Length: 238
Image (tube, helix red, strand yellow):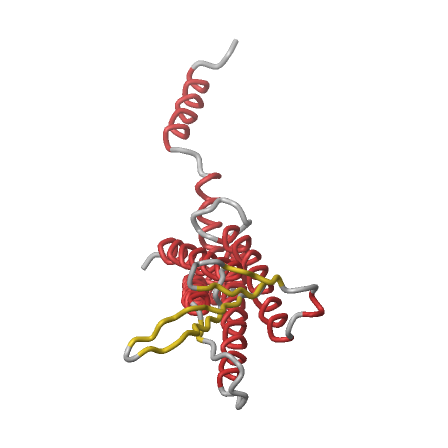
């Protein structure tokens, strides 16, 4: 497969994964708990408690929602702070990966020489892989604390379920990881051979051939010069 095709696929996958992770940061319903009464064999849900990284809400059976925004940073639960920091760090590293990847892609005409572009695309791929690892860790931390709340012996606590943002974030993180590995795959072989003796010898041979082609005069010019010399010898100037 051509390097350009692999890099384009890597770019599309990293963009899609990064967007998924960014959306989960603003989505509601990271954990959900439905409560209600039981009547016979039917279960009637009369209220829902749900929470995100920024607020906690309660929705009753009439679809009226009351929310309480989380207070200042140092008053929020510790695990929420950890998840926020990991996701923001993942998005920042992903942005850096986008810049380096665009500079190093073969289909762009910026970024310097070939070896420099290879290094940029390799660094960009590593940034996307790191971004994916950070976001996966954030979702894992949140899911762990939700599970610990469910296993709490206190029966007065609500039992929460994992919400849609967590699963969407895990999918986006895996897609971004795959895109980063695509970047590395596209240049790993070329980056290893750029500084090898065979590559240096090949480049020197190509440069020598190019110089010879520039310094060698065309045969037509040589023939014209020889005719001029012969005419000068036959008809010298007065």
